[in-house]
Length: 335
Ligand code: P6P
Image 1 (cartoon, rainbow, N blue to C red):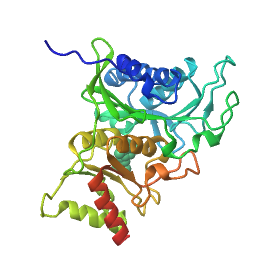
Image 2: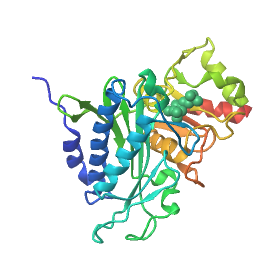
Image 3: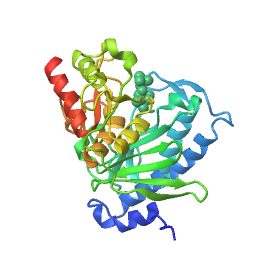
Image 4: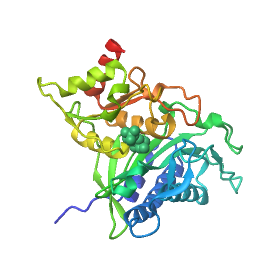
């Protein structure tokens, strides 16, 4: 008799006591992410059939062409989190500024804020390559019952109470942490439930996969150039395998299961790299450390970086601990 996997709902209830911050709010927050993920998954999976592919004819604050599915996912996550009156503020990578959710009922003085990248890797949508949603949850730091301020969103990554991603791949998974390890849930689309398929996910201590856009090689700092050559040398367990999907969630997820390192360094083209500290690097770094991996900008632990602006970018090196430490050695020695 095949053992039936625990559902996400059962898992949340069983681990309620482990959420050291919540009176059920965080559980309801994770549940609302789950609901929105199912709806976005439905749209992603049929994107080729309806007029939702292609550019929305607008650009986001990053100056990137917004895809119709980007816009759709952004609106859906914001609506879901707002309508269920769970959070007091939301910041989205697709929005210029944060959104204050004034509680309709003074009794509900919601204490959590969410930062979200609603559809990361969306340039892959039209070519049918995996994309993902990334989310990050903090307790507000300003007084309950007042409108949130920028201070609530510019917290160090070490202050996160939860973080996770949804990967819309060959199967759809929700992977998240509340600070007690990382667990992965796979969606059974036939019945619309997520099941615990990957309990206690851990990065292997080392690996043989490196993920970087080598098209930027000539623009990288010398330390990164030398580390990439190190990965390619015939020596010991090297050369490593190069795997780069162009979707952070997909590259991260594969590396967490198989062992590997992801790098988006700064370059002469992008002085602080491309990835956003608050929407991509902090949540993925929280997950990485909870899975015994590591995440830095090459010199500083990502979760220790003091944010200065909502959309700031940082160089990002993340994955199996020993591989990140080796890359940091090269950065220290050659940059
Ligand atoms: P490039 C997607 O836009 C993203 O933010 C990450 O998901 C991905 O790893 C990276 O950028 C890809 O960037 O410059 O290599 O195409």
